[in-house]
Structure formats: C-alpha cells, structure tokens
Image (cartoon, rainbow, N blue to C red; front, side, top):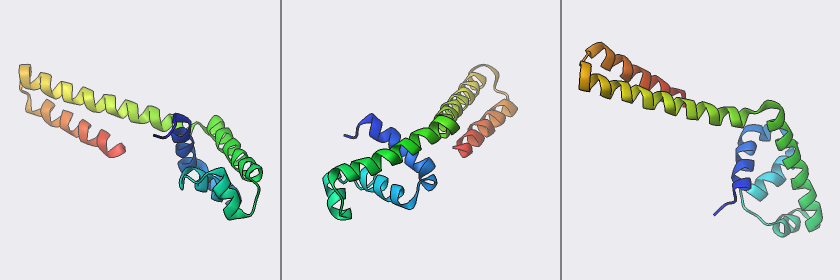
Length: 121
C-alpha cells in the first residue's frame, strides 16, 4: 500500500509536473509513477544512487514549493468536498420535499442542483 506522502506527491505531480525541467520530470515520474527504486533509477540513468536521490529531492522541492505558493491541490480537494456537500444537501431537500411538500418545482430544481454539482467534478 502506498504511503500517504507518496499519494500526496502524486497529486503534486499531476498538477505541477509541467513546471519541472524535463530531467526532473523524468526522474520524479520514474520514482513515483513507475515505482522504480533509487538503485534502479541510478542504474538506468548511469548515476550513483545518491545522484538519483538528489535529483528526485530537487524535483520534490519544486513541487512542494509550487503547492505552497499556488495551493491548487488543496483548493481542488476543498472544492470536491464542498460539491459533495451541495449534492448531499440537494438530495436531502428532495427527500424532505417528497415527504412533506410534494412540490414538483422543488423536486426538479433540487435534481438540477445535484446534476450541475456533479458536472463540476
């Protein structure tokens, strides 16, 4: 099972990989996406294990800095949570309406809200 740190770094790679140099992108993708060890990367690239580790650490530092400045990954997670809450609330409104009011307009509008929120994600 992947470590939480690895999963977070994979999110950062998804968002910010294009801001890395080609070499940094190559190393970080081998390590995180292809799950190669430092030794395997070093052997494939003709480096020492320490050289591979340093290259990956520099790329990680760039990714961490980008998230610290832009906060896009966290904003996306917050947005997804809020959208989930909107969808849940629209279902609750529809259920309440069906139980107590039976307004066709409320039922239709709550369905629209639910579907629109789903399209955002």
